[in-house]
Image (cartoon, rainbow, N blue to C red; front, side, top):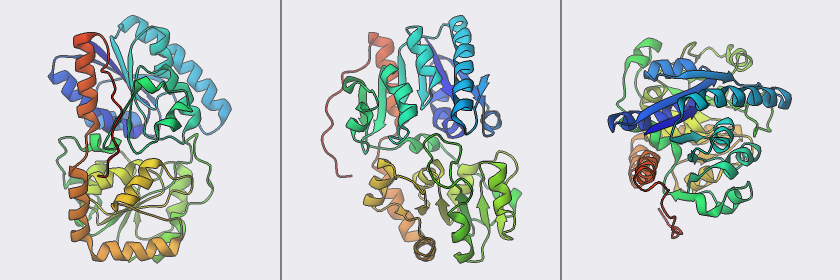
Length: 359
């Protein structure tokens, strides 16, 4: 059985790396496609994943996104017609669902951002099985075109897949001259994302940085304009090539992020985390705040105060985060289960209504 996996964004490489290894270990043939975007091919190279580069990201304008997406869809269709996979797998891709549906290929999609409405409307109606964190109200997904019968909620979040069989390495610490648990990691806003509606010219992190303790800050900019914005901070280190960011998060004392993925990766690893995303908060974020494993604010003073608190009670809070995360489901287990059932029976599992949970 051949499984086609479309990796269209940098975090998705970490989401799918464990699935790819497990599928290959179990004898499946795996076809990976990707696109030119945000150092994505460099990350795949670092992870040792073979891939086809098909198309590129269209930039921040609607016109650019549309043209790039249409061109990529056509190129993907040509490749997939030739390769003839039996099943498609993706996370928030907009081209793969259309190609798979058009060619009659069953598909499994993972969705964890209910606010990306435009993207979801292009993906959800065409996906055979939709796996999502149960923190997301299924009606939010149905409003974007999902069929209720295709939805499978899980008691977990996407980034648990990122740390599947993860072993931390101290090599990136040596490379950046850092000591473990003696630095902070930061990530600015996803200004190129179609769902972002904040200020692309200024980051909330710029107001927070001067209030933090005098310790190294490892900051991962998304664009050159963001890199220039933080260059004048003397204690800020900005890697200029793909790095083992999971290990950096694991050994960090604190994570402060205006995005989403690295925040949730940090929590999956047990690292105290503060979210400063300046837009509508995701259902997963609200759930994490309610569970007590994440703090959220866009007010610089409130973030600074919480940062000092987290730095002070670091070990105790880490233990609580690790305990809370250990009770959750890993998306990899769920996806592999769905694939095995489909291979055996030629259809996906019947979905039962999930009972309310209080984990």
